[in-house]
Image (cartoon, rainbow, N blue to C red; front, side, top):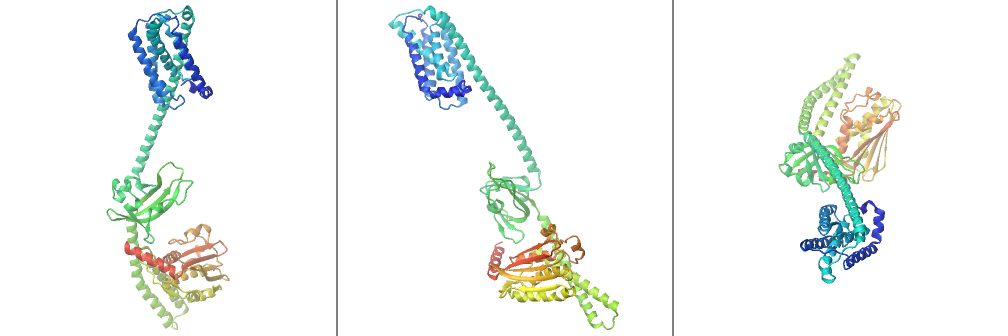
Length: 580
């Protein structure tokens, strides 16, 4: 539209719209009144006049009454673009009527000029033609029917022929060019926009096809849950691993399709765990990687998977709640169980002969001590120590296999915590004295009894005390403390040894981990003691942690819940196991 290219002028015209509207109608009325003056030519083409009047009335109703009742209202561009063809047709039709009614001598030029001038005051450029058609229609109706009946025929004056007609012709050509140019610019812009949109759509389609090809080709399963925890996407690998069809998953909630269990304690995991608790500023991992046991509710099939869930930042304009990637580790779990079974079997087979060897060596030390020389006694002592280390390794391997196979059971009973700690410290008193290490026990008064597995907790204390004494230099100190903290009892073993590098702290409680450097050189352990200790404390629903600084010693601490809390946890766990 012409006025769209001049926003300031358009705003001024719209601000005074009523004024220009009244001026326009005044000019139109004046142009209508001029038809009664003796200036016109006889009109004999009644048929053409009637047709043109019908077109004029149709134009008036369609554009003036319907579309321009509120001239500042919004019109869809597509509708205006189609309407422009009709308006151009009206313009050509009006020009034809002028030609057939006298050409350069036609009185219609005068009215057409006035209509265009009036329309230019407040109408868009293409709407000027509409106003011209309306004005010509009024004029033609008057000249063809009213004027002959009232005044008779008349001739147009010389002034109109010499001035008005040429001006009107030039103005009409200029306005037609302006309208066509304005429309052409808009059409070019739309065509360019359409081409750009088509190009971008093609690029998006290509990228989407690439992404689909990549996601479909990966061996890991991928599924996407929306914010209502329903499946919205599943790749081919996920369908193959889970053994389900698309219709079994898409549009359904995760918890209605699967039941997921934590691999560590076999507790159910709901899909809420895969979602961020609060808004996140960037895409990141929310859950995992963690091993889960998944049961499909449709086929009651168990699958072991290693799953990672990632969330999207809140600003993302999508309905994606989380993206989960997983791999099938069922075969790995099966091989791991076979390995653990083998280790357990081998350890059991080794335990019996080791027990016999240690027994015979002990007898040799006691019964034949007087008949053996010093070298022989040394050999027997070394053999006994080595067999003891081997027996400890066998016991550790058995404990690890039981922990991994979930066959290690706790036998809970009320235990006097003070006496248990005193007994554990006394067992290492001689070893500490041999290294000139001060081993002390400091306890709060009236520590309550707690429900624990006495044998397993004694194993934890033995592992921690052995490490503290072994890694403390002669003349150092080892202190054992215990106190009540809320609904827990916290016990700590503090030493003044070499300390542990900060880089090693996150890995201390993993299987077969050994600290490199000076600590490793003096170590005779297997790297299983702390792993077993953590597993036992976890089974008691407790916590274990370490604070250490290289060269400043270490403090290993663990907490155990009081009886009521542990009993609730044990009852809940037994109920879950009974259901599953």
